[in-house]
Length: 148
Image (cartoon, rainbow, N blue to C red):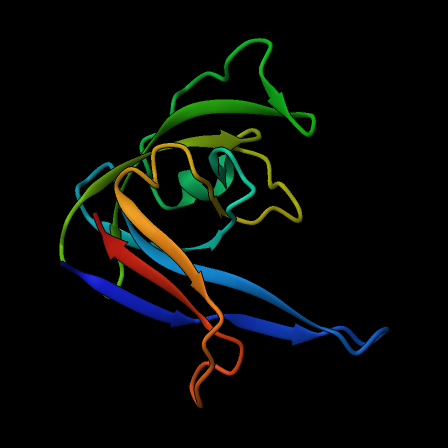
């Protein structure tokens, strides 16, 4: 079984001094030409659907639907449902297909948008575990990624 442990990223809030954590995972994404481009996703167990800016997908030359779905929007942005062909950086070469919402107009920059890796279509292919065991290289714990 292929397995990867990544230290949780953290920062200290200036206003309160609290340490806040996040998990980030690099994915290689298959382009229209069959090449691989790397993108970082925030792993979010509270997010139902993986999402990425349509503008980013266009820059990476990923296959995205030409037209958004009528009547479907996310935070006021148009949505193009599609698939990401992905490999997990640091694991074996298994290729996964994750459903993804491409947000916004591919020709217009969308400010303050983070690539999010959600649950739908992901957790049935890879196991994501948040582990608070600390070490010198992971002072606040790790994200464990395992092939199912």
